[in-house]
Amino acid sequence: MRIAERAQRIEPFHVMEVAKAATALAQQAQPGEPPMLYLNIGEPDFTAPPPVLEAAQRALNQGRTQYVHALGLDALRERISDWYRSRFGVAVPAHRIVVTAGASAALQLACLALIEAGDEVLMPDPSYPCNRQFVQAADGRAVLLPASAAQRFQLTAEQVREHWGPRTRGVLLASPSNPTGTSIALQELNHIHQWVRAHDGVTLVDEIYLGLSHDEAYGQTALALGEDIISINSFSKYFQMTGWRLGWLVVPEVLVPVVERLAQNLYICANTVAQHAALACFEPQSLAIYEQRRAEFRARRDFFVPALAQAGLPVPVMPDGAFYAWADCSALCARLGLASSWELAFALMEKAGIAATPGRDFGVHENGRYIRFSTANSMAQLHEAANRLERFAKGAV
Image (cartoon, rainbow, N blue to C red):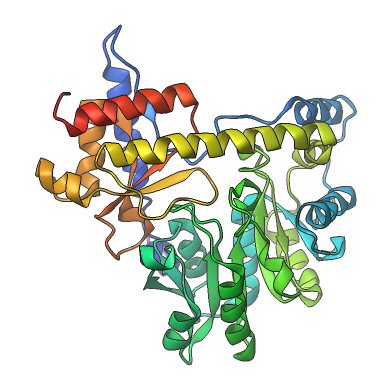
């Protein structure tokens, strides 16, 4: 069977190999052995709070399960608009908000609407691998630019100016970022956006972890910089609705009918029950729960990042958001005779019962030097992981 070149360009998600190996090892464990600790999964251990679950049940009981408008429920778009106003002090009209089948659909819609074959999109290295695959699926080319710890693993305006070429269509950034949990300063982002705007490009910003910001210096939406910013967001992370597959896209007004046509043809509408449930995310009781959980995520970060350093896995930049720790494993690998974070990930699974994510998926620049840990786990599990890591580093496991 002839496979489309487009499909062949999509790179494998290597972390799935690690996940499968971790699952296989866990299934082989003998009774009484310590369980595998999964610090490789970028998913909150919290689920949707009670008001959201109750709203979903009401929608089912009342038969509100049929197709809705491709742009999303008007009431939900209004609630998202109100959230931008109350949380960030930014006016985002509801008619510019498109509810999507997860942030993945939002990225796909944006890329299909804006990228022509051969267009280049500048992105930081490291960055979430699926983001560049959306660019390539639209027949564009993701151009990864090395982003060091000194620049918080984010692109700089100087890099964008230096690498902007005749085929450059724009930039795709993430703030806070997966895998690093670091954000780009709003002033630097503004410098980037001004350059992109002056060159008739597009600025796309993945903000799915925005609600989980831990530092006031960075917890602002890129939408504050102008109506031509395109923001991708999600109900998965801050709102903890991962399996509900619900997100949204904020676009300039002129792009709304374009995105609407694409959505109508690609998936008709986002999940109706999930949309009715998501209305309850913005109730005061739900928001209070989310803020308590955000504080818990911060407490986990504050415990686990120093614990990693104690085990020989320093985190060069303290994450200011999300729930990840991007640790430098080069010294530990050298001491243990391991070639890279890929080998370290398998050694951790086999000897310490810890699943973590090696840097291979997130780019090509120094990808063997870093390993990602997820702190989206209970404090009890993180304490156990810290103890195992310390024993592993000392060769006691």
